[in-house]
Image 1 (cartoon, rainbow, N blue to C red):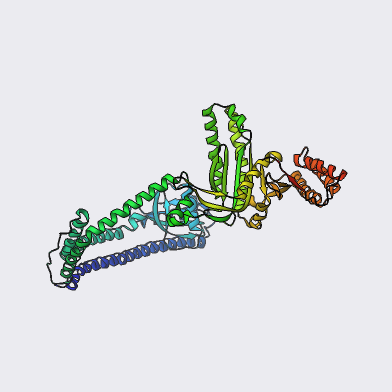
Image 2: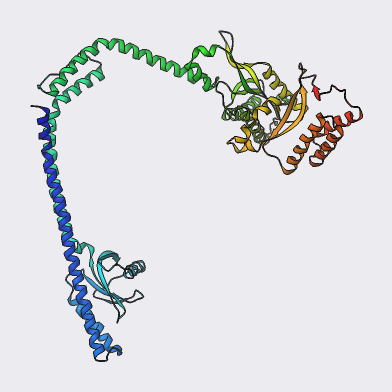
Length: 563
């Protein structure tokens, strides 16, 4: 028998489900009809009660008794008795509320809470004049109401929701029973025919499971029918025969791939402690390229702890190591969070760079921000050192920017991914100059120029607030060409901002040989920043050159004779 015929047999139980849908439709139709009849009856009773109340009031007015309280009370009593006579169940209650929501009449007591009364009055004062639902006396009730103006009563005819919908709920229960029986029959029929339909497919699946779990490619499936399932079984047997031939080769390839993956993962885990992750990724992507150095423009940073020899002599070795580890941990985290690469530790010094192996547009800016973060972190580190009675660390940071050679440098037995070149040496000299200029951070002219528009367009709010101060033009030891050096801060006080602006103007006058004008401006700086070291030193130079001008070829370069 064709699968098409089998599908027809599977579809037959759907007819049973269609009957269930018909039962559901019948339930909703019956429920709607019963509810409509109940609503009509409730509205009819409300109409009769309203007519009776109007009749009683008309008798009072026709006989001029409307102004007599005793006669009005008699009319209300008559209305109450009439309401009692209209009750059809023990759960039905007719009551009247005055405009304040107080119960004026009730055929049975209802303990209406304040919240229920407030909600009920909202419904009564609304525009809906049909059947309504509300909680009364802690139970849900269905009611209809009318307002009887002469008595200023809201008259409500109420019934418990469970009694009001009792017949509809009974139909629902019957419908659910019928649906349950129908569904059970449909499920049994579906199981019966589905089993018959899928037995051949199940055998194919079982054979495949046996092959995949045990690796036994000798398993075959019996061809039972001359239909699509039979052709599937036959094709499956052919496929397994072909797979059996290639299985040994596939296993070998898979085994080699697993070993290679595990080996790579182990290498990554080990070397990430020593080599940047970006460098490892680049190595695995192109191992040959890592053996060749390249010239790149990088930002190079050197950081050093001042007077470290004195500190180390005053501390026990284990205390010194613990302090250094905590210091390095904070400093390295800052560098790496700013996309920097820690090249090496040189005793107590840190060498880092930005721009390799992955280049970023804001490498120069990130190097400066990292240096500022590092100096701030040292303040927190020193607070802890004070608490534990250990010496404080003071650091100096020098940063340069320029073309260097970057790559794996060394021998076949020991190689380092590092940077070398004249720009690296200058960065190291910049760090040394921080002591001469009493500055925590010194940056070179090339780094200052490399910042360019990066500071203006940087997303980091700290970058926009950076301020720079030109301190000097210096020729470091071994060089004849001078380099401008700057210091930087994240933010300045009002006095500092004014002083730094005047200082930079003074430097311009100084290099234009206007030593008197420069001296006046440096004195203005000292008036704002008392005892400022750099302004004091430059003022001394201005006085000296004003008294004895330098030769015509003077370029303002200060030549350093020591590192």
